[in-house]
Image (tube, rainbow, N blue to C red; front, side):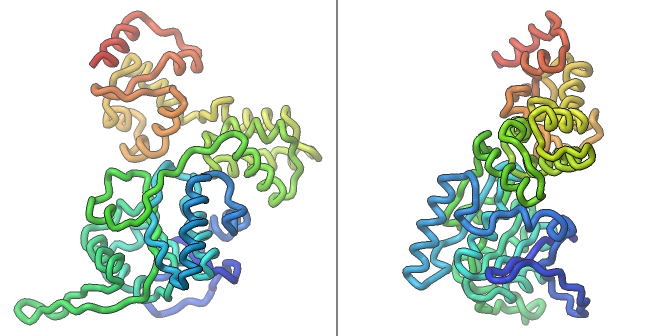
Length: 365
């Protein structure tokens, strides 16, 4: 069962070592949250870097709700986009700005109807319920959310057979923040119940440099602007990757007894960890080489790619493809995936005539 964190507007996250016999589902801290993430997450809207349109939307919605004295009048939020762009941080910030609590779960943790019922009944007025990968909710759990989101009631079936009846159980008014990497996988009834639907954008180098510099201060090591730019270039426009690479560079600098990490130090560290100038790692290059060597550069279906790599289809689509498509190393055609000339050049592989003919045919179709 995947269970993530609870954050309170006034208190910092604390680990609760007390075990309870109560079977009610509770959101708790992951090991990653305890060791690394909390200190790097922005705590307020002002600290949140990037996503300027989203920040403006939140300022208006939260400010207006406070003036009305109705915290839940902001409506529900659906955030979609690639992993690591700050969806969870956004939910936590909303709760902090409203002065309420955020309860954070991933969809697989809410597998049974009793799970979502227990969570909804535990919410106080104005609390933020964050559900990551919300498109993975099962049908029964999703349908329970319909009345909860609109009317703040739970429609629960009581009894069996002819004696069965539906009871409406009121719950406190709350704010649901859903996150997904696959907007199209959400059912229309669920998607239409969100007041705000926002696409999380990839970050610019300038925004990532600010994040990297802030992270270096938290991790207590000094880094030059040029070194921060090198990390930003290889971060795929994603803050989570930028933080991970910054941590790796910090480890390298401390191991080599470097006081101020400069550009050449960052390059040495990232090359040691096999992250190239475009942010590609060995797994990304392996995918591109597989399409080139096993399928003559494509077109090839996603199922065939996943089978050859020994990965799940969803892993390839969610983890590898988004950046390769964005960076121009991969294209999608009606016949399948194809590598581009840029990929051949980057991998130092010569493109044969047969591959050129297939590329033209795939693009024409």
